[in-house]
Image 1: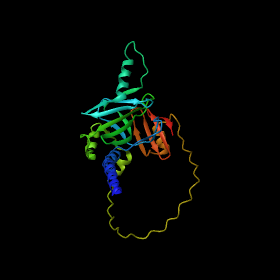
Image 2 (image 1 turned 180 degrees about the vertical axis):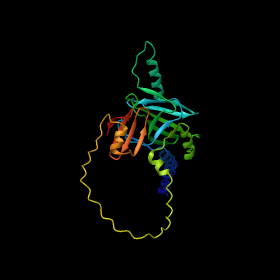
Image 3 (image 1 turned 135 degrees about the vertical axis):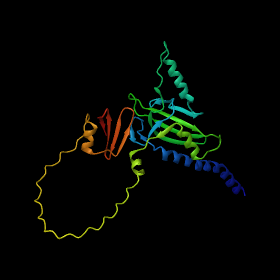
Image 4 (image 1 turned 90 degrees about the horizontal axis):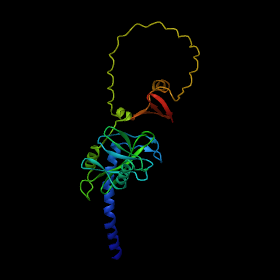
Length: 269
């Protein structure tokens, strides 16, 4: 009897946590399906695998440099971004340090406005809201990072994925990628069978053409800093994926990544 009571007590303790995890999982899956995640390096200095380019559709999202001890924590509520906790205090300290006669070395921060772009690198669904982690491209050699929390409308209740997705869609949208566009394109209709041709008279056999002369070996394909986009495309063909950012373009090939600034190669990986 005692063992049965203890087992029932354990179920009462574990069941709410299990049900919470089961209801939060569809929300995370819906977010990651619509906004493909980007994988950064461990130090957040570069991008390993590019996901969807995220367009900001609301003004005043504050993000902190990746070297900041306290990443920017932002709450999206009542249609506005609001800095919270230590990030808000750090922002006030940075503003104060810039006043005449004051000095300080606060962490680098930047306020992003609608139309700017960045990456989604992480998603966590908590009991009271969904948290999205954003990382910008390098701006004047600084990448910016922020955690944005979208609180659930009703405290203590986990909503359906549609409710959370509508809330997130008020602030960001994902740009379509080349691969998705190709997948969404309708397949070409099969060609109609050709009409039967009328029989023709037999022709005399045609003598085979002379053997071709030996063609010279093709020059090896090369790529170098300073080449134009046209030169790279001529040598290697069109890229499999193109990501356009504020100040540069990144072309992805099966075995390399080429970065262009003002139409010229600046980096090859």
